[in-house]
Image (cartoon, rainbow, N blue to C red):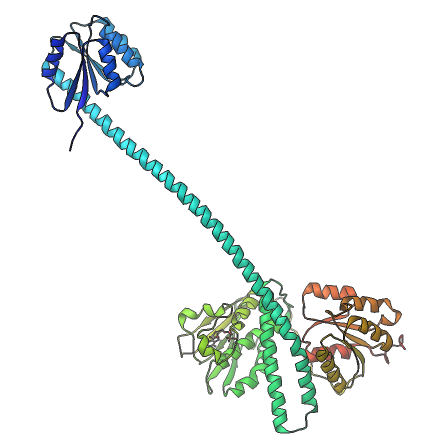
Length: 550
Ligand code: ADP
């Protein structure tokens, strides 16, 4: 490897002295540059980078010390070490001390070659170190600036990435919102035609001659429509939950009541599937503060799944256990089981373990995700366990107990009290004519007198003309909406004591409040549960009972 020789400036007015120095320092590692005057020396200092100056103190044009002073004062050359060659010791040696930078040394003439060489070698070594350090330093500076450039580039990339992520997230949030809105609208729109279908089935069931095939066909339609309503309701609930619009109607209830309601609803299905159901629960009644309909729906959903994914002859067990301040309900089956890696996935919306296989069993893959969200709204949790495919599954819900409350009386179910009916005059208003007509026929079958209107203006006119006991009023109506119809009716003397029941697709708290503010007595969501509606109709005073009306 080529090593650049170390340059040494030798300054003496006598050429022979310079030659002596050259012969003393004859070494390939050194390159000696000669100067016989101060000017030559200064010129050389401008042209080369020196490791050392060897300077004769006495020169005719300028003393060695004066030249040294000039060298020390120039920034570029101030740190070059100087060896002075003097004939004898002189006070002026200290002149340079004030300049501080760079080493200064002295050699007395006649020069001792060994001392000269060793001093020169020390300075040469110092210079080599300095050069090495400068190199490393330069490499370090280069590396630092390269790193800074990379960091800068990385920061820019990062900023760009963050921007993209924010943008994508926003797009996804928007898409998700649109999907929820679409699902809500879809469910809402699917629900509307179901109401008249269900009413028509009630009428058919009531009127059909006792022919077995017709009865069976009626039951099939009834069962399938109920199933469809349940799916649509699930879809609607899911989108409501996603939009943060669901409200629990909590009330005191025991877990035993919930289990009983669910078991009652699913018994026909279990029998149809040729399976058996066993309930194991403690005798002590365990109190919850829960939404009875929702919680029953969750347990029912788990039992339905257990039946759906099991074979005839299999047993389904519902086990209720009392834990500290909580209760757990476990629904266990001996069915197809769930692979371990899918256990959490099935709680995701639309998730099904093996879509192609499950398609034959029906379902939207909403039930469990809805169950999870609803259980969480109750402050509880749900988990799935399965030893593996073909080895059955179990689903466990845990809910907080509400030990403060007293155990409520068993609520009687609301059967349609057909024989104890008081005839009412009922105006039905709905722009879905099928819905209005079938409901009218249904109420007619029971014995009530009904009137029909299909828009807001007609409703108001009909209400004034017929002065019914009850008005079942749709909200979204042509010509005049249901709220305005209700308000106008309440302004009339004849409209004071009528019972106004709103029927809407949207059952949110603000919809209820708006309905009550407009003068409605009750608010129901479509498709209206017939037994619930009959309960409301039953409770309403009739013209016969109400002396203030003609
Ligand atoms: P689906 O309407 O498809 O039944 P769920 O959300 O209720 O929707 O269930 C999601 C999936 O979880 C099902 O499609 C099925 O693959 C799996 N699953 C649910 N319950 C059981 C069970 N008891 N045994 C085996 N697999 C089940």
